[in-house]
Length: 560
Image (cartoon, rainbow, N blue to C red; front, side, top):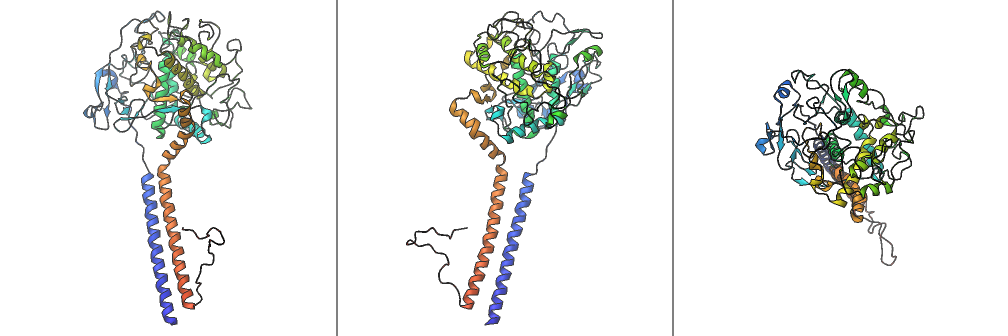
Protein backbone atom coordinates (compact mmCIF):
# COMPACT_ATOMS: atom_id res chain seq x y z
CA UNK A 1 0.00 0.00 0.00
CA UNK A 2 2.80 2.37 0.94
CA UNK A 3 4.86 1.36 -2.15
CA UNK A 4 1.90 2.02 -4.45
CA UNK A 5 1.35 5.43 -2.89
CA UNK A 6 5.04 6.36 -3.38
CA UNK A 7 4.90 5.37 -7.05
CA UNK A 8 1.80 7.48 -7.63
CA UNK A 9 3.44 10.50 -5.98
CA UNK A 10 6.63 10.07 -8.07
CA UNK A 11 4.59 9.81 -11.28
CA UNK A 12 2.64 12.92 -10.31
CA UNK A 13 5.84 14.89 -9.63
CA UNK A 14 7.33 13.80 -12.97
CA UNK A 15 4.17 14.91 -14.82
CA UNK A 16 4.26 18.26 -13.02
CA UNK A 17 7.90 18.83 -13.99
CA UNK A 18 7.18 18.03 -17.66
CA UNK A 19 4.20 20.38 -17.75
CA UNK A 20 6.15 23.17 -16.08
CA UNK A 21 9.12 22.70 -18.45
CA UNK A 22 6.79 22.83 -21.46
CA UNK A 23 5.18 26.06 -20.23
CA UNK A 24 8.56 27.68 -19.52
CA UNK A 25 9.81 26.82 -23.03
CA UNK A 26 6.63 28.25 -24.54
CA UNK A 27 7.09 31.41 -22.49
CA UNK A 28 10.73 31.75 -23.63
CA UNK A 29 9.72 31.27 -27.27
CA UNK A 30 7.04 33.94 -26.92
CA UNK A 31 9.53 36.40 -25.42
CA UNK A 32 11.97 35.71 -28.28
CA UNK A 33 9.27 36.32 -30.91
CA UNK A 34 8.18 39.46 -29.06
CA UNK A 35 11.71 40.89 -29.05
CA UNK A 36 12.29 40.05 -32.72
CA UNK A 37 8.97 41.54 -33.76
CA UNK A 38 9.58 44.86 -32.07
CA UNK A 39 13.26 45.25 -32.98
CA UNK A 40 13.26 47.51 -36.04
CA UNK A 41 16.05 49.16 -37.98
CA UNK A 42 16.11 52.59 -39.48
CA UNK A 43 17.36 53.37 -42.95
CA UNK A 44 18.83 56.59 -44.26
CA UNK A 45 19.03 57.95 -47.80
CA UNK A 46 21.70 60.01 -49.57
CA UNK A 47 21.51 63.70 -50.49
CA UNK A 48 21.83 63.24 -54.24
CA UNK A 49 21.60 66.75 -55.67
CA UNK A 50 24.73 68.30 -54.15
CA UNK A 51 27.38 66.77 -56.43
CA UNK A 52 29.33 68.66 -59.14
CA UNK A 53 27.71 66.59 -61.88
CA UNK A 54 24.20 67.42 -60.74
CA UNK A 55 24.97 71.11 -60.13
CA UNK A 56 26.58 71.55 -63.53
CA UNK A 57 23.87 69.63 -65.37
CA UNK A 58 21.22 71.36 -63.23
CA UNK A 59 19.25 68.12 -63.24
CA UNK A 60 17.97 67.22 -59.77
CA UNK A 61 16.08 64.01 -60.54
CA UNK A 62 17.23 61.36 -58.07
CA UNK A 63 16.55 57.65 -58.31
CA UNK A 64 13.79 56.43 -56.02
CA UNK A 65 15.23 53.42 -54.14
CA UNK A 66 11.82 51.75 -54.12
CA UNK A 67 12.11 50.67 -57.76
CA UNK A 68 15.54 51.91 -58.83
CA UNK A 69 14.17 54.35 -61.40
CA UNK A 70 14.49 58.12 -61.72
CA UNK A 71 11.68 59.81 -59.77
CA UNK A 72 10.05 56.38 -59.31
CA UNK A 73 8.91 56.49 -62.94
CA UNK A 74 8.66 52.68 -63.22
CA UNK A 75 6.06 52.74 -60.44
CA UNK A 76 4.19 55.69 -61.91
CA UNK A 77 5.25 57.99 -59.10
CA UNK A 78 6.71 60.78 -61.23
CA UNK A 79 8.98 61.89 -64.03
CA UNK A 80 11.97 64.17 -64.51
CA UNK A 81 10.69 67.36 -66.12
CA UNK A 82 11.82 70.89 -66.94
CA UNK A 83 11.01 73.52 -64.32
CA UNK A 84 8.75 76.26 -65.64
CA UNK A 85 8.70 79.52 -63.67
CA UNK A 86 6.22 82.33 -64.17
CA UNK A 87 7.63 85.27 -66.13
CA UNK A 88 4.94 87.72 -65.01
CA UNK A 89 6.43 90.98 -63.67
CA UNK A 90 7.44 91.59 -60.07
CA UNK A 91 6.86 94.75 -58.09
CA UNK A 92 9.42 97.58 -57.97
CA UNK A 93 10.81 96.75 -54.52
CA UNK A 94 13.84 94.86 -55.93
CA UNK A 95 15.25 96.78 -58.94
CA UNK A 96 18.05 94.29 -59.70
CA UNK A 97 18.15 91.15 -61.81
CA UNK A 98 20.47 88.17 -62.12
CA UNK A 99 22.36 89.03 -58.95
CA UNK A 100 20.74 86.69 -56.43
CA UNK A 101 20.54 82.88 -56.51
CA UNK A 102 16.94 83.00 -55.27
CA UNK A 103 15.59 84.85 -58.30
CA UNK A 104 13.26 82.65 -60.34
CA UNK A 105 13.84 79.82 -57.87
CA UNK A 106 15.25 77.20 -58.39
CA UNK A 107 16.63 77.89 -61.87
CA UNK A 108 20.07 79.07 -60.76
CA UNK A 109 20.68 75.65 -59.22
CA UNK A 110 18.31 73.28 -61.08
CA UNK A 111 16.22 73.51 -64.23
CA UNK A 112 14.94 69.92 -64.03
CA UNK A 113 13.34 68.27 -61.01
CA UNK A 114 10.99 65.39 -60.28
CA UNK A 115 7.37 66.16 -61.13
CA UNK A 116 5.36 63.79 -58.94
CA UNK A 117 2.01 62.29 -59.93
CA UNK A 118 -1.11 61.59 -57.90
CA UNK A 119 -0.60 61.72 -54.15
CA UNK A 120 3.19 61.36 -54.32
CA UNK A 121 5.66 64.00 -53.17
CA UNK A 122 9.35 64.43 -52.41
CA UNK A 123 12.54 65.20 -54.28
CA UNK A 124 12.45 61.62 -55.65
CA UNK A 125 8.64 61.17 -55.43
CA UNK A 126 9.23 58.64 -52.66
CA UNK A 127 6.92 60.27 -50.12
CA UNK A 128 3.25 61.18 -49.79
CA UNK A 129 1.59 64.54 -50.23
CA UNK A 130 0.49 66.33 -47.09
CA UNK A 131 -2.55 64.54 -45.70
CA UNK A 132 -1.86 61.18 -47.38
CA UNK A 133 -0.27 58.08 -45.88
CA UNK A 134 0.47 54.45 -46.70
CA UNK A 135 2.83 52.63 -49.03
CA UNK A 136 0.93 53.81 -52.12
CA UNK A 137 -0.16 57.12 -50.54
CA UNK A 138 -3.80 56.09 -50.85
CA UNK A 139 -4.82 56.59 -47.22
CA UNK A 140 -6.43 59.97 -46.62
CA UNK A 141 -6.14 61.09 -43.00
CA UNK A 142 -6.87 64.36 -41.19
CA UNK A 143 -4.50 65.36 -38.40
CA UNK A 144 -5.47 67.82 -35.68
CA UNK A 145 -3.18 70.46 -34.21
CA UNK A 146 -4.05 71.09 -30.58
CA UNK A 147 -3.49 73.81 -27.99
CA UNK A 148 -0.25 73.03 -26.16
CA UNK A 149 -2.07 73.47 -22.84
CA UNK A 150 -4.59 70.77 -23.81
CA UNK A 151 -1.86 68.18 -24.27
CA UNK A 152 -1.31 65.72 -21.46
CA UNK A 153 1.93 65.96 -19.49
CA UNK A 154 3.32 62.96 -21.37
CA UNK A 155 2.36 64.55 -24.72
CA UNK A 156 4.07 67.81 -23.74
CA UNK A 157 7.17 65.91 -22.71
CA UNK A 158 7.13 63.96 -25.97
CA UNK A 159 6.94 67.22 -27.95
CA UNK A 160 9.95 68.62 -26.07
CA UNK A 161 11.87 65.38 -26.60
CA UNK A 162 11.09 65.47 -30.34
CA UNK A 163 12.41 69.04 -30.55
CA UNK A 164 15.63 68.06 -28.82
CA UNK A 165 16.01 64.94 -30.95
CA UNK A 166 15.64 67.07 -34.09
CA UNK A 167 18.21 69.52 -32.74
CA UNK A 168 20.79 66.78 -32.19
CA UNK A 169 20.18 64.57 -35.26
CA UNK A 170 21.86 65.26 -38.59
CA UNK A 171 19.32 65.44 -41.40
CA UNK A 172 19.64 62.28 -43.51
CA UNK A 173 17.98 63.87 -46.55
CA UNK A 174 19.11 67.49 -46.76
CA UNK A 175 22.19 69.67 -46.62
CA UNK A 176 22.50 73.47 -46.59
CA UNK A 177 24.29 75.57 -49.18
CA UNK A 178 27.11 77.65 -47.67
CA UNK A 179 28.07 79.68 -50.71
CA UNK A 180 26.53 81.32 -53.72
CA UNK A 181 26.46 79.55 -57.08
CA UNK A 182 29.15 81.95 -58.31
CA UNK A 183 31.34 81.18 -55.27
CA UNK A 184 30.97 77.49 -56.18
CA UNK A 185 32.44 78.24 -59.63
CA UNK A 186 29.07 77.57 -61.20
CA UNK A 187 28.73 74.26 -59.40
CA UNK A 188 32.16 72.73 -60.05
CA UNK A 189 33.21 73.12 -56.39
CA UNK A 190 30.10 72.44 -54.27
CA UNK A 191 29.76 74.29 -50.98
CA UNK A 192 27.37 72.36 -48.76
CA UNK A 193 27.31 71.36 -45.10
CA UNK A 194 25.54 68.89 -42.89
CA UNK A 195 22.85 70.29 -40.62
CA UNK A 196 20.56 68.94 -37.92
CA UNK A 197 16.89 68.40 -38.67
CA UNK A 198 15.87 71.34 -36.48
CA UNK A 199 18.62 73.69 -37.67
CA UNK A 200 17.75 72.90 -41.28
CA UNK A 201 14.55 74.85 -40.74
CA UNK A 202 16.35 77.65 -38.91
CA UNK A 203 18.65 77.96 -41.92
CA UNK A 204 15.73 77.87 -44.37
CA UNK A 205 14.09 80.80 -42.58
CA UNK A 206 17.40 82.68 -42.67
CA UNK A 207 18.03 81.94 -46.34
CA UNK A 208 14.58 83.01 -47.53
CA UNK A 209 14.82 86.35 -45.73
CA UNK A 210 18.52 87.22 -46.01
CA UNK A 211 19.76 90.35 -47.75
CA UNK A 212 20.87 90.17 -51.39
CA UNK A 213 24.65 90.28 -51.82
CA UNK A 214 25.48 92.77 -54.57
CA UNK A 215 29.28 92.45 -54.55
CA UNK A 216 31.77 94.02 -52.18
CA UNK A 217 31.93 94.07 -48.38
CA UNK A 218 28.63 95.21 -46.91
CA UNK A 219 27.17 95.98 -50.32
CA UNK A 220 23.70 94.46 -49.96
CA UNK A 221 20.08 95.11 -50.84
CA UNK A 222 18.01 94.77 -47.68
CA UNK A 223 14.53 95.37 -49.11
CA UNK A 224 14.11 91.79 -50.28
CA UNK A 225 12.36 88.89 -48.56
CA UNK A 226 10.78 85.90 -50.26
CA UNK A 227 8.59 84.92 -47.29
CA UNK A 228 7.67 88.16 -45.47
CA UNK A 229 6.12 91.56 -46.12
CA UNK A 230 3.93 90.40 -48.98
CA UNK A 231 1.44 87.85 -50.24
CA UNK A 232 3.53 84.69 -49.74
CA UNK A 233 3.92 85.31 -46.00
CA UNK A 234 1.01 83.05 -45.04
CA UNK A 235 1.29 80.30 -47.71
CA UNK A 236 5.07 80.07 -47.25
CA UNK A 237 4.84 79.61 -43.49
CA UNK A 238 1.98 77.15 -43.97
CA UNK A 239 4.20 74.92 -46.11
CA UNK A 240 7.13 75.51 -43.75
CA UNK A 241 5.14 74.10 -40.81
CA UNK A 242 3.78 71.20 -42.86
CA UNK A 243 7.27 70.32 -44.04
CA UNK A 244 8.64 70.58 -40.48
CA UNK A 245 5.85 68.34 -39.21
CA UNK A 246 6.59 65.89 -42.04
CA UNK A 247 10.29 65.68 -41.18
CA UNK A 248 9.59 65.14 -37.46
CA UNK A 249 7.27 62.27 -38.32
CA UNK A 250 9.97 60.69 -40.46
CA UNK A 251 12.57 61.20 -37.73
CA UNK A 252 10.51 59.75 -34.88
CA UNK A 253 8.24 57.29 -36.68
CA UNK A 254 5.31 58.97 -34.92
CA UNK A 255 2.95 59.65 -37.81
CA UNK A 256 0.29 60.99 -35.44
CA UNK A 257 2.54 63.91 -34.47
CA UNK A 258 1.23 67.43 -35.03
CA UNK A 259 2.66 70.81 -34.07
CA UNK A 260 0.81 72.28 -31.07
CA UNK A 261 -0.17 75.94 -31.06
CA UNK A 262 -0.09 78.67 -28.43
CA UNK A 263 -3.29 80.71 -28.32
CA UNK A 264 -1.78 83.98 -27.12
CA UNK A 265 -4.95 86.08 -27.37
CA UNK A 266 -5.30 88.33 -24.30
CA UNK A 267 -2.10 86.92 -22.74
CA UNK A 268 -0.32 89.17 -20.25
CA UNK A 269 2.97 87.31 -20.29
CA UNK A 270 4.78 84.38 -21.91
CA UNK A 271 2.52 81.56 -20.76
CA UNK A 272 4.63 78.88 -22.42
CA UNK A 273 7.86 80.09 -20.82
CA UNK A 274 8.01 77.45 -18.10
CA UNK A 275 10.57 74.72 -17.53
CA UNK A 276 7.87 72.14 -18.25
CA UNK A 277 7.35 73.66 -21.72
CA UNK A 278 9.60 76.05 -23.63
CA UNK A 279 11.92 77.09 -20.79
CA UNK A 280 11.61 79.62 -17.97
CA UNK A 281 13.81 82.66 -17.47
CA UNK A 282 17.22 81.92 -15.97
CA UNK A 283 17.57 83.21 -12.38
CA UNK A 284 21.24 83.93 -13.14
CA UNK A 285 20.78 85.93 -16.34
CA UNK A 286 17.36 87.24 -17.50
CA UNK A 287 18.41 86.95 -21.15
CA UNK A 288 19.03 83.20 -20.92
CA UNK A 289 16.89 80.10 -20.51
CA UNK A 290 16.61 78.40 -17.12
CA UNK A 291 19.24 75.67 -16.56
CA UNK A 292 16.34 73.35 -15.68
CA UNK A 293 15.20 73.44 -19.30
CA UNK A 294 16.76 71.40 -22.09
CA UNK A 295 16.67 74.54 -24.25
CA UNK A 296 19.32 76.19 -22.05
CA UNK A 297 21.92 74.00 -23.80
CA UNK A 298 20.79 74.89 -27.33
CA UNK A 299 23.10 76.90 -29.58
CA UNK A 300 21.73 79.27 -32.20
CA UNK A 301 22.79 79.55 -35.84
CA UNK A 302 22.37 82.21 -38.56
CA UNK A 303 22.06 85.00 -35.98
CA UNK A 304 24.72 87.42 -37.29
CA UNK A 305 23.49 88.77 -40.65
CA UNK A 306 25.56 91.95 -40.43
CA UNK A 307 28.75 89.89 -40.15
CA UNK A 308 27.77 87.69 -43.11
CA UNK A 309 27.08 90.77 -45.22
CA UNK A 310 30.40 92.34 -44.31
CA UNK A 311 32.27 89.15 -45.21
CA UNK A 312 30.10 88.45 -48.29
CA UNK A 313 29.27 84.95 -47.07
CA UNK A 314 26.21 82.89 -46.21
CA UNK A 315 25.37 81.37 -42.86
CA UNK A 316 27.14 77.99 -42.69
CA UNK A 317 25.19 76.56 -39.75
CA UNK A 318 27.99 76.95 -37.19
CA UNK A 319 26.86 77.44 -33.55
CA UNK A 320 26.97 81.08 -32.49
CA UNK A 321 26.03 81.15 -28.83
CA UNK A 322 23.13 80.34 -26.50
CA UNK A 323 19.44 80.77 -27.21
CA UNK A 324 18.37 84.20 -25.99
CA UNK A 325 14.97 85.21 -24.63
CA UNK A 326 13.83 87.89 -22.18
CA UNK A 327 10.06 88.13 -22.69
CA UNK A 328 8.35 91.35 -21.71
CA UNK A 329 11.52 93.44 -21.30
CA UNK A 330 11.18 94.94 -24.76
CA UNK A 331 10.50 98.40 -26.19
CA UNK A 332 7.01 99.20 -24.89
CA UNK A 333 6.59 101.99 -27.40
CA UNK A 334 7.00 99.50 -30.21
CA UNK A 335 4.80 96.80 -28.66
CA UNK A 336 2.46 98.23 -25.99
CA UNK A 337 0.73 94.87 -25.42
CA UNK A 338 0.14 91.46 -26.92
CA UNK A 339 -2.80 91.03 -29.34
CA UNK A 340 -6.29 90.61 -27.92
CA UNK A 341 -9.29 88.59 -29.04
CA UNK A 342 -10.78 91.85 -30.34
CA UNK A 343 -7.65 92.48 -32.42
CA UNK A 344 -7.92 89.06 -34.04
CA UNK A 345 -11.59 89.59 -34.81
CA UNK A 346 -10.89 93.00 -36.35
CA UNK A 347 -8.22 91.54 -38.61
CA UNK A 348 -10.55 88.72 -39.64
CA UNK A 349 -13.17 91.25 -40.73
CA UNK A 350 -10.90 92.61 -43.50
CA UNK A 351 -12.15 91.25 -46.81
CA UNK A 352 -9.15 91.83 -49.09
CA UNK A 353 -6.10 89.59 -48.93
CA UNK A 354 -3.70 92.03 -50.63
CA UNK A 355 -4.04 95.67 -51.64
CA UNK A 356 -2.05 98.50 -53.20
CA UNK A 357 1.71 97.95 -53.33
CA UNK A 358 1.28 94.50 -51.71
CA UNK A 359 4.04 95.13 -49.19
CA UNK A 360 4.32 96.52 -45.64
CA UNK A 361 2.64 99.76 -46.79
CA UNK A 362 -0.61 98.04 -47.87
CA UNK A 363 -3.83 99.40 -46.32
CA UNK A 364 -6.92 97.29 -45.52
CA UNK A 365 -4.98 94.13 -46.38
CA UNK A 366 -5.73 91.09 -44.24
CA UNK A 367 -2.21 89.74 -44.82
CA UNK A 368 -0.51 93.02 -43.86
CA UNK A 369 -2.67 93.46 -40.76
CA UNK A 370 -2.12 89.89 -39.57
CA UNK A 371 1.60 90.10 -40.25
CA UNK A 372 1.67 93.20 -38.06
CA UNK A 373 2.48 96.13 -40.32
CA UNK A 374 -1.04 97.61 -40.17
CA UNK A 375 -3.35 98.48 -37.31
CA UNK A 376 -5.90 95.76 -36.50
CA UNK A 377 -8.44 98.44 -35.55
CA UNK A 378 -8.20 100.58 -38.67
CA UNK A 379 -6.46 98.33 -41.20
CA UNK A 380 -4.11 101.20 -42.07
CA UNK A 381 -0.37 100.67 -42.36
CA UNK A 382 1.68 102.02 -39.45
CA UNK A 383 5.35 102.73 -38.83
CA UNK A 384 7.29 102.50 -35.59
CA UNK A 385 5.08 99.77 -34.17
CA UNK A 386 5.04 95.98 -34.38
CA UNK A 387 1.55 94.53 -34.11
CA UNK A 388 -0.19 91.12 -34.32
CA UNK A 389 2.32 88.51 -35.61
CA UNK A 390 5.26 90.90 -35.34
CA UNK A 391 4.43 91.85 -31.75
CA UNK A 392 5.13 88.33 -30.44
CA UNK A 393 8.56 88.33 -32.04
CA UNK A 394 9.50 91.67 -30.48
CA UNK A 395 7.92 90.72 -27.14
CA UNK A 396 10.23 87.69 -26.81
CA UNK A 397 13.17 90.10 -26.82
CA UNK A 398 15.89 87.71 -27.91
CA UNK A 399 16.73 85.25 -30.67
CA UNK A 400 13.12 85.31 -31.89
CA UNK A 401 13.22 89.09 -32.41
CA UNK A 402 15.52 88.97 -35.45
CA UNK A 403 13.74 87.90 -38.65
CA UNK A 404 16.58 85.86 -40.08
CA UNK A 405 17.36 83.99 -36.85
CA UNK A 406 13.90 83.89 -35.28
CA UNK A 407 13.30 80.17 -35.88
CA UNK A 408 16.12 79.37 -33.44
CA UNK A 409 13.55 79.73 -30.65
CA UNK A 410 11.11 76.78 -30.67
CA UNK A 411 8.35 79.14 -29.54
CA UNK A 412 8.45 80.20 -33.20
CA UNK A 413 6.60 76.97 -34.09
CA UNK A 414 3.84 77.44 -31.52
CA UNK A 415 3.39 81.07 -32.55
CA UNK A 416 3.24 80.43 -36.29
CA UNK A 417 0.88 77.50 -35.86
CA UNK A 418 -1.59 79.92 -34.26
CA UNK A 419 -0.99 82.51 -37.00
CA UNK A 420 -1.75 79.77 -39.53
CA UNK A 421 -5.01 79.01 -37.70
CA UNK A 422 -6.07 82.67 -38.01
CA UNK A 423 -5.29 82.48 -41.73
CA UNK A 424 -7.50 79.41 -41.86
CA UNK A 425 -10.34 81.24 -40.09
CA UNK A 426 -10.15 84.00 -42.70
CA UNK A 427 -10.21 81.53 -45.60
CA UNK A 428 -13.29 79.80 -44.21
CA UNK A 429 -15.10 83.03 -43.45
CA UNK A 430 -14.51 84.77 -46.79
CA UNK A 431 -13.89 81.77 -49.09
CA UNK A 432 -11.78 83.75 -51.58
CA UNK A 433 -11.17 82.26 -55.03
CA UNK A 434 -7.57 81.69 -56.03
CA UNK A 435 -7.79 84.75 -58.27
CA UNK A 436 -7.65 86.86 -55.10
CA UNK A 437 -4.02 85.83 -54.72
CA UNK A 438 -1.79 88.18 -56.80
CA UNK A 439 -0.48 86.72 -60.03
CA UNK A 440 1.77 89.68 -60.90
CA UNK A 441 3.41 92.85 -59.54
CA UNK A 442 3.92 91.52 -56.01
CA UNK A 443 7.45 91.85 -54.60
CA UNK A 444 9.95 89.36 -55.99
CA UNK A 445 9.10 85.74 -55.17
CA UNK A 446 5.54 86.45 -54.01
CA UNK A 447 3.52 86.06 -57.22
CA UNK A 448 1.14 83.11 -57.51
CA UNK A 449 3.32 81.26 -60.04
CA UNK A 450 6.60 81.57 -58.12
CA UNK A 451 8.08 78.60 -56.28
CA UNK A 452 8.83 78.98 -52.59
CA UNK A 453 12.48 79.59 -51.67
CA UNK A 454 14.39 77.41 -50.75
CA UNK A 455 12.19 74.31 -50.92
CA UNK A 456 13.17 71.24 -52.91
CA UNK A 457 10.75 69.60 -53.76
CA UNK A 458 9.01 72.60 -55.24
CA UNK A 459 5.89 74.25 -53.81
CA UNK A 460 4.08 77.03 -55.65
CA UNK A 461 2.72 80.02 -53.67
CA UNK A 462 -0.80 79.99 -55.07
CA UNK A 463 -1.22 76.24 -54.54
CA UNK A 464 -1.35 76.81 -50.77
CA UNK A 465 -3.87 79.63 -50.79
CA UNK A 466 -6.48 77.08 -49.72
CA UNK A 467 -8.05 75.49 -46.65
CA UNK A 468 -6.16 73.22 -44.29
CA UNK A 469 -8.81 70.56 -44.92
CA UNK A 470 -7.43 70.13 -48.44
CA UNK A 471 -3.98 69.62 -46.90
CA UNK A 472 -5.05 67.05 -44.34
CA UNK A 473 -5.02 68.94 -41.08
CA UNK A 474 -7.27 70.89 -38.76
CA UNK A 475 -7.11 73.03 -35.61
CA UNK A 476 -8.91 71.72 -32.55
CA UNK A 477 -10.47 75.05 -31.59
CA UNK A 478 -12.00 75.42 -35.07
CA UNK A 479 -13.87 72.13 -34.82
CA UNK A 480 -17.55 72.01 -33.88
CA UNK A 481 -18.21 71.14 -30.19
CA UNK A 482 -18.78 67.42 -30.72
CA UNK A 483 -15.64 67.09 -32.85
CA UNK A 484 -13.68 69.12 -30.32
CA UNK A 485 -14.62 66.69 -27.57
CA UNK A 486 -13.50 63.75 -29.67
CA UNK A 487 -10.23 65.38 -30.75
CA UNK A 488 -9.25 67.05 -27.49
CA UNK A 489 -10.25 64.32 -25.05
CA UNK A 490 -10.98 60.99 -26.74
CA UNK A 491 -8.57 60.89 -29.69
CA UNK A 492 -5.37 61.46 -27.64
CA UNK A 493 -6.09 58.34 -25.61
CA UNK A 494 -6.95 56.33 -28.72
CA UNK A 495 -3.76 57.50 -30.42
CA UNK A 496 -1.69 56.49 -27.42
CA UNK A 497 -3.37 53.09 -27.40
CA UNK A 498 -2.72 52.72 -31.14
CA UNK A 499 0.95 53.54 -30.67
CA UNK A 500 1.38 50.87 -27.98
CA UNK A 501 -1.11 48.29 -29.28
CA UNK A 502 1.68 45.84 -29.96
CA UNK A 503 2.98 46.11 -26.45
CA UNK A 504 -0.53 45.77 -25.07
CA UNK A 505 -1.11 42.67 -27.20
CA UNK A 506 2.20 41.17 -26.11
CA UNK A 507 1.46 42.03 -22.49
CA UNK A 508 -1.93 40.34 -22.83
CA UNK A 509 -0.36 37.22 -24.30
CA UNK A 510 2.35 37.17 -21.64
CA UNK A 511 -0.30 37.68 -18.99
CA UNK A 512 -2.29 34.77 -20.39
CA UNK A 513 0.83 32.56 -20.33
CA UNK A 514 1.60 33.56 -16.75
CA UNK A 515 -2.02 32.92 -15.81
CA UNK A 516 -1.84 29.53 -17.53
CA UNK A 517 1.33 28.61 -15.64
CA UNK A 518 -0.27 29.69 -12.37
CA UNK A 519 -3.45 27.79 -13.16
CA UNK A 520 -1.50 24.65 -14.00
CA UNK A 521 0.55 24.85 -10.82
CA UNK A 522 -2.58 25.39 -8.73
CA UNK A 523 -4.43 22.58 -10.52
CA UNK A 524 -1.52 20.20 -10.04
CA UNK A 525 -1.25 21.15 -6.40
CA UNK A 526 -4.97 20.63 -5.95
CA UNK A 527 -4.77 17.18 -7.56
CA UNK A 528 -1.93 16.21 -5.28
CA UNK A 529 -3.82 17.44 -2.25
CA UNK A 530 -6.95 15.54 -3.31
CA UNK A 531 -5.06 12.31 -3.80
CA UNK A 532 -3.36 12.67 -0.47
CA UNK A 533 -6.66 13.31 1.30
CA UNK A 534 -8.21 10.27 -0.38
CA UNK A 535 -5.22 8.17 0.59
CA UNK A 536 -5.43 9.25 4.25
CA UNK A 537 -9.23 9.05 4.42
CA UNK A 538 -9.61 12.54 5.80
CA UNK A 539 -10.79 14.40 2.65
CA UNK A 540 -13.47 17.09 2.94
CA UNK A 541 -16.85 16.14 1.49
CA UNK A 542 -17.97 19.83 1.22
CA UNK A 543 -15.98 22.99 0.29
CA UNK A 544 -14.74 24.79 3.34
CA UNK A 545 -16.33 28.01 2.13
CA UNK A 546 -19.71 27.60 0.47
CA UNK A 547 -22.40 30.05 -0.54
CA UNK A 548 -26.01 29.33 0.21
CA UNK A 549 -29.20 31.01 -0.84
CA UNK A 550 -30.38 30.93 2.76
CA UNK A 551 -27.40 32.99 3.93
CA UNK A 552 -27.64 35.34 0.96
CA UNK A 553 -23.85 35.73 0.84
CA UNK A 554 -21.70 36.03 -2.27
CA UNK A 555 -19.54 33.09 -3.23
CA UNK A 556 -15.86 33.32 -2.40
CA UNK A 557 -15.11 30.75 -5.08
CA UNK A 558 -14.20 32.30 -8.41
CA UNK A 559 -12.92 31.04 -11.71
CA UNK A 560 -9.27 31.92 -12.31
